[in-house]
Picture (spheres, rainbow, N blue to C red):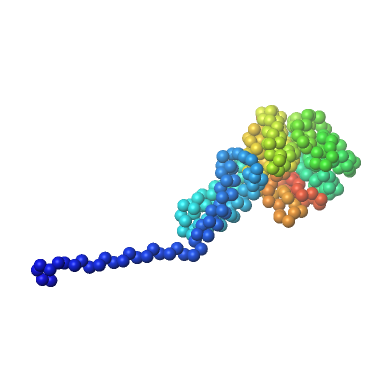
Length: 339
C-alpha cells in the first residue's frame, strides 16, 4: 500500500438470514395452549378450594383424567420449543397429579376394645330398578345396615317383605322415583329427623355394641347446571349434621353423595364432622362407582360410607347390581368402645 493512498475498508459481510421456524411449531403451540386451558382452570379451582360454578363442578369429577390433556400439552409445547408454555403445562400436570392422592388421614383414632363388628352396604337402586338384585346381594353378603337411595314405594315394599327376618327395622323417607330412600337395620332403630333435601335423607339412631350410633343416609341432588346452588346447599346441610355430632355419638353416614373428594363441598363435609371415607381408609379412594351401564366405564367415586373416629375399617368392596348405574359399596367396620 503506497503512502497517500486512501484506505478502502473491506465490505461488511451481509447479515445472515433468520432461521425459518420449522413448519408445525405454531400449530403445536396453539394446540398445547388449548389442551392445557381446561386443566388449568379446574386444577386452579381445586387448589383454591372452590367448586365455583358450571362447568367446574362437573369437570372436577374428571380431575384425575385431566393429567392426560395436560401431559399432551406439555409434549406439544416441548416440540414447539415454547419454554414458558411447557413450564406451565408441567406445573399443571404436577399439581393435578398431586391432587389425585387420597384426601384426609389414612387411619382413625379409634380407642378401646372392639365393641362390635358392623357390615354396612349402601346402594343407589336407580328408581327401584335394582331392587331384586339388591335383595340377592343382602342375602349373600349379610350386611347389618343397608342404605338404599332412589327406593320408591314399590322398592320399600319389596325390601320390607323380602328382608323382614334379617332386617326388621327401618327408617324411611316415602317418595316416588328418586325421592324415596330407606335405611334397613338388623338393630332396633329410633327415628330421627331426616336431613331436609329434595331427595330422601332419612335418619335414625341404633344401639350397637352398647353405643348409640347416629345413622344418616345422604343423597343430595346431582350437580347438574341448573341445580348447583341446591347441590351445595344440601351438602352443606349434611355437613351441618356432621358438625353437630363431631364430638358426640359415633356416626355412620352413607349413600350417593353426588360428589367426590375433588369437590370442595364434600371435603368440607369430611372436615366438619371429622369423618373418614371408608374407601380411603381401605386403600380404594379412587375406585369409581358411577356411571355403570354407560358408553364410558365408571370414572368417579360418588358413593361413600363415611365413619367417625370411633370406627376402624377392615375392608371395602364394590358390588355391581343389575338395573342401576351405580356400584354399591360394602364396608366392614369395627366399632370401638372408646375410652
